[in-house]
Length: 105
Image 1 (cartoon, rainbow, N blue to C red):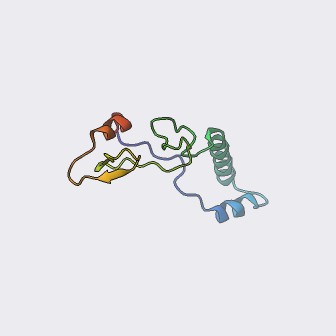
Image 2: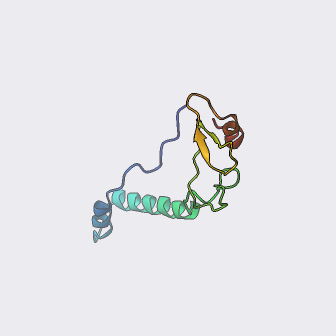
Image 3: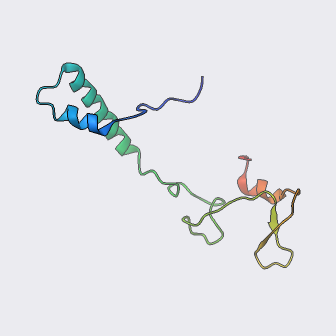
């Protein structure tokens, strides 16, 4: 069992418009348009789709602004000077990164 396939893979909006503007569509065309409309209405209810919707600590940048980019670089460590900057230690993975990311990595 692989990943679930999307309900709609591709929609040619020009063809949908042509079908919708047809004065007397065939039963198959009318049924297809109705099914597409139901799928679209269902998708509208599932949103909004944003990467910030479910963003919570510890996946928020130090600024506590969910719109700021956060990256967990495995070879960067907090600076020994305590200035809040990070330094690269090539070949040594930061063990705190696993704590930050949980069981994801």
